[in-house]
Length: 184
Image 1: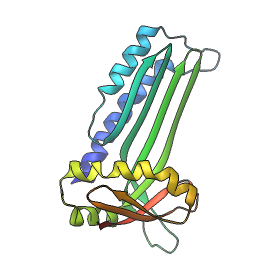
Image 2 (image 1 turned 90 degrees about the horizontal axis):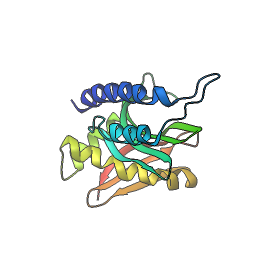
Image 3 (image 1 turned 90 degrees about the vertical axis):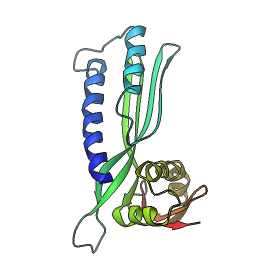
């Protein structure tokens, strides 16, 4: 099952990413000053993390600065007012890391969540019903999130040649919740 595969790979990728970043994180009384070759190696090793569930990655070292921007699918659950239980879901997470010694900035942000119902509709209605195709179709959702969040309310984010994710912006005002998928 796709969700189980994502859960297993995500756990492994998270653990590996944490191990990679640990030596570069500042701690009380100490700010690492990594050499350029260490930052280049970090970018290379980040690119080697498990690719399954990764929607997009930029990992580069230029002009004395390391930049990592990764969109990854993770297992999640969503709950809405009036629901008796949590619905299994996928979360589309944006993780950024910027290291320009002595600066170290790391953020992780939930962009979107797609419940089991929406994923089932994508499998049912999409032209290509493979796991890889369904995951690829989460990228337009992630890319459309900023505009949908700015607009607020309900959204329809098209997936070229396939259909559209339909949903609403969560009460937090910062997360897109895709409820279903319609063919186009």
